Amino acid sequence: MKKLLVKALALAVCMSTLCLAGCGAKPDAPAPAPAAGNTSEGSSEFKTLESGKLIIGTNAEFPPFEYVGDDGEPDGFDMALIKAVGEKLGLEVEIQNMEFSSLVTAIGSKIDGAIAGMTVTEERLQTVDFSDPYYEAVQYVLVTSDSDIKSAEDLVGKNIGVQLGTTGNFIAEDDIEGATVNAYNKAVDAVNDLVNGKNDAVIVDKNPALVFESNFEGQVVALEGSQFGFENEQYAIALPKDSELTPAVNKALEELKADGTFDELVKKYIEEAE
Ligand code: ARG
Image (cartoon, rainbow, N blue to C red):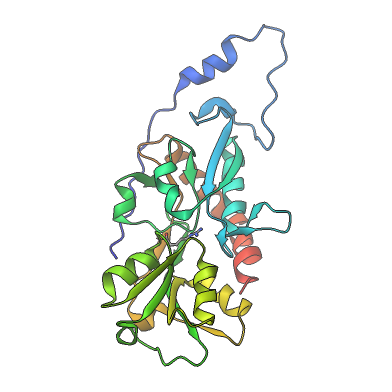
């Protein structure tokens, strides 16, 4: 799968929204209270679907990047990362949990962007822009502990489980000859059907594969994608085309990497989960 990095477009910040927020206020009226989580930068700097808010879509079926926490809310590395980005931008982050395959088309109408362990692909770049990549990934193959599958040839003609609309789905359909591809809305359902014999293998990203391997200990084994010739992928935040948010998100990511926050989140959410 070919990957393409996004050229960030530096767009002028729209001053008119700043004026709208400030011009109506009486001279001695107190400044409007910033939205929760705001920093010094004003929330009216960016045009988003709801002023002062960054509505971000995810699919919380992808541990350790996103999963539903004990409190019923989406949690995980991506959630923590986007909240930190929102804070830098002075925007309150609201998460919308939806099907992975709906995320790209919802951007710009239902959500301001998406963070979902989403791989930068040429196809998606036709519809959205991506931030700078924040994580390198690769597809892995989950098989049952007693399976003989070891290489790409062994997958030919097999029943392969994937999550619908993911790069694992595209690989199974485009690159594996004669495979019967079973696509699920939740990757864990593909794993359940691996355990009960309906699938011979599941193609899913490395880190979730490792989490599933430990959650289904003794039943499933995660095989490295390099064994199957799978290429590395890059995760990035998907944003509307030509959005003023993209350079700002890139700057925030850069700052979070420089100040150590990013590495702390990797340690807390990714390294401890595996
Ligand atoms: N990296 C893969 C892709 O972009 C899978 C992502 C699935 N993410 C999720 N939150 N379910 O297609």
